[in-house]
Length: 439
Image (tube, rainbow, N blue to C red):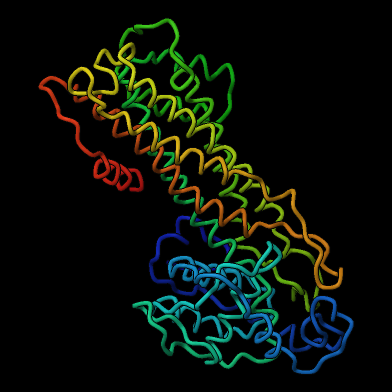
C-alpha cells in the first residue's frame, strides 16, 4: 500500500497490508520551515494548553512524558496499527514540522508488526495526545513496543528531538483510525444486508413493486435508488401475493438507503481527515500558522448521524425476522418449527432484540457534549473519539441482528417440516452467518 498523504481510504486503513512511502518532500518542506522560524511557536518555544504564554527551552521530551498517561485496557493491535498508518499518512501530507527521517521508522514499525501499548481512555476529540505520546516514548526507547506476537519488546527507535514532540502528537490519528475501521466494517455489513433482505423477500413472497424504477425516480434519493436497484436485481419477477407488505419490505429501500447515504457521508468526512494536515501549528509557506484544525467536529457529527441511521435499518431487519416466524407470511409452521408446537427459530427474535437494544444505546449522539479544560484555554471538545469508539462497537450488534434474519430466512427457504426437522441450538448457525456477513 503506497502512502502519499493524499489518497488513503478507510478500506486501506483496515486492510492490514504492508506500507511504503511515496515521497518525503512535503514533510521535509515543513521541517525546514520549522527550523528557520524565530518568532514564538506554540509547543516549541512555549508551553502548551494554559502554559501557552510561558517561554520554555527544550521542553518537548517532558511534554511527551507528561502526556503518555492514558487509562483503561490496551486497545487491540489492529487499532494501534491503524493509528500508526493514519499518523504516517498525515505526516506525509506535510505541515507538521516533524523530522522527515522519522517517517521511514514509522513505516518499519508498521511493516514489522510493532504497535505501541495505547490505553483506551485519554482523548476527547481534540487530539489523541496520550496515544501518540506513548508511541513517541516507544520510539525513544522509554516504553516497550508490543511485538508481532503481542509480547512487549524492543522495536524501532528514533531519537525524537524536543522540537519533534508536539508536532508528532498533535493529531487525532487514533480517533480517525477507529472511525475508518468502523466505516469500512459497517459498510461491509450494510451491503451484505441487502442480500439478506433478498432472501427474506423470497421466503415470504414479498412484492417487488416498491422497488420499481418509477418509484425511485419520483424521489431521487441516491442511497434509496441504489439499494432498490440492487435488491430488484436479486429477485425473481413474480406477481405479488399481497397488495402491500409490511414496512420491513415495502420501505426497505428508503430506510436502508438513508443509512447507506449516512455511511457514505461519514466515509467522505473521515477520508478528508485521513489525508489532511490537522497540525497545530501548521508549518506552511515559510510560516507557522496557529489554528484549530485539530478539532474533530466534522468527524463527530458525521459519525453521530451514521450511528443513528443504523438503528432504523436494524429495526427493519428485526421486523422482517418477525414475519419469518409468522405462518401468514411463510406458509410454514409458527417459528419455522419442524412440527406443531415446536419452538423452531423462536429464540432468534430474543437474540436480535437484545442486540438491537445495544445498538440503540450506541446511537446516542456525542456532539451535544463539551468540556472546558486547561484552566479554560481549551473550552470546547468534539468527543469524536467517543463517536468513533461507539461506531466500532456498533459492528457486533448490527452483525448479530442481520445474522438472526439470515438464519431464519435460510430456514424458511429450506421449508422445515418437510421432512420434520427437530429443534436444535442455533448458535453455530449464527456464528456461520456472522462470518458470511463480515466477508
